[in-house]
Image 1 (tube, helix red, strand yellow):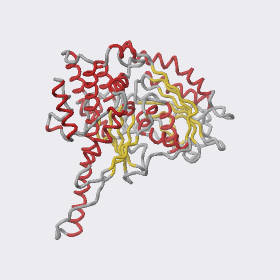
Image 2: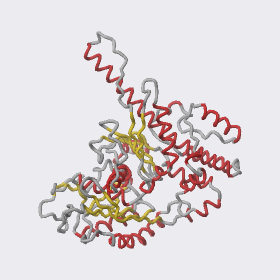
Image 3: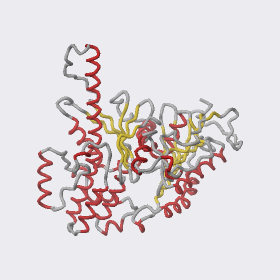
Image 4: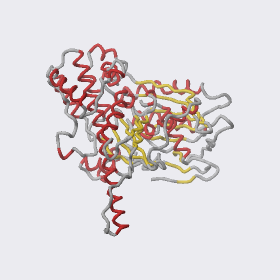
Length: 495
């Protein structure tokens, strides 16, 4: 790992003088963000003023047309990046504030993602940083998703509004659920280290939730809707097909009378109901802190291959049950995490009592609520699904309200829908957070295909799952461990 300090004057390894990315007068700092990790080419200009206020001066995204292939094709996406990135940048620069000849900071996604796609944005960003003599940051794509709620709060302040996010429920940490077409992660993040302190609690052992939903949607949606879809993000089309409005959700958590009646009705109407819940058929996996979605996809394939679904109403119910089963599976692991945290806290209290009283007095019933309120941040493309937000809130409060914790409250923090999918605004913000924390990226860096937010857990789990030793992995297959687990971070000297 390379951490170093650059002496004044601030020169790169090639002798290029860097301007300082400091706020100029009252206008604050202007950041150029570039995102090309997958099939979206996105460019943003973000201005961050004093007082934690932000404004998007420019933000546009072009998605490559992969419909012919039914999913993301690396070469099609690469060609789209090469075609659209330069025109987007040219357009963005027209929106620079008056008297600002160039951005103060350039940020591009460095990973994780498709290596060839990443290279287009990363190399372009480095080139612009050299031409303008401004600092450059290669950002982690998933960190961008994880910090989007902070971007949304800063944008609200920039519009003169008070952010809707309350003070932290827990003074030490919060949870983050990142759900997209390429990743499914449940994180625990300390409030005092939102950049590199992430611990992965659970991740998918097979497909990402978004990928599975897109594949199921391709089987469930009528041909007319599939042919009319503008992108291969078919899960969005499925949500629109299934629900005409949020009022039609009629979601009931497991165990309630309304849910039992609904399940009984569906059992009588459709032979494929219920869709098996992942891990619930194997006793040893009931408490496994992991996600699995391949079984849901296999069930849908079998149902459709057997010709069991005919009418549109049945397609709607099948789509609804696929989403509901998926989202309850996501929520169930959060419940399991909180309950395990409760047990650990209560056990620690009992141990402390025994130490204080030398085992002479039996411990009383403990009333301390270590997590009487859960702060959950959600992000990623699937977080744009309104049913997911609806299910998480109701399911978590239903399962976590018990006699011991009778007034459990779930605070769900979700960014605006337009900021959930891959976008350059979140990349600009992630880079700004890294810059404010005292870091920049050297110009020698290359794209990183696998780059975990956690410094230990995921890489170790990945090694065990593949059944190979870490030292036997080829360089391209190794997963960088943690934000600072990649080469090229340079400590700023002007702080």
